[in-house]
Amino acid sequence: MTFQNMNRLACLRQVSVQVGQGLRWGAMLWCCLSSWTAAAQPAGQTVDRIKAAYVFNFAKFVELPASEDKILRMCVMGRDDLNGAMLSLNRRVAQGREIMVRKDVAIEQAKECSMVFVGESDARLLPLLVRQLGSASVLLVSDARQAMDQGAHLSMVFNDDRVEFDVNLLNLQKSSIKASSQMLKLARVVVR
Image 1 (cartoon, one colour):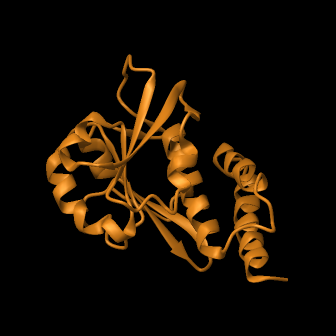
Image 2 (cartoon, rainbow, N blue to C red):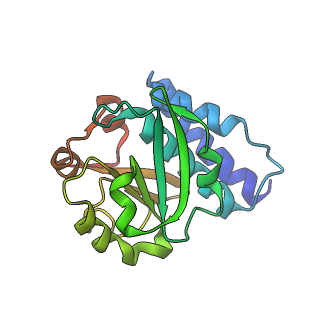
């Protein structure tokens, strides 16, 4: 069995545990994962696709303040777009809104976004971005190691061959954003 297949099996085991708990979150992630081919990509690309699937599910399970805009603007700050995996979310639908992914967005334009993603290699942008956003209702997601300490709402962590996530409930509340109880149950850490 190749490393890629072992990594995929580890991810599927994690998801099947979540599905066994009866949570829609796991079921949706299962659908995303099961559509991949095993001949697949190198391990790094697989992890990036899983992270993008998490970002998509965040868009579905986080209540952003009501907007009449039918577009959910998902902005990628810097150049780290998870090896193109974030672009695969373009035109998908979350909460009745079509996702439009914008890449390499300037910090000054962040308040025009519904969600902002900052990748590990662009982590230096997080403090500037947090100051720029203030208490704006823009969901800030990152996979940078210290993202939670720097003000991100949601942070993805690659740990023991699986992707997990942390939630900063205090930061979400400051931005008038609500996370579903189902999502909070699946979080590795919830900062209250």
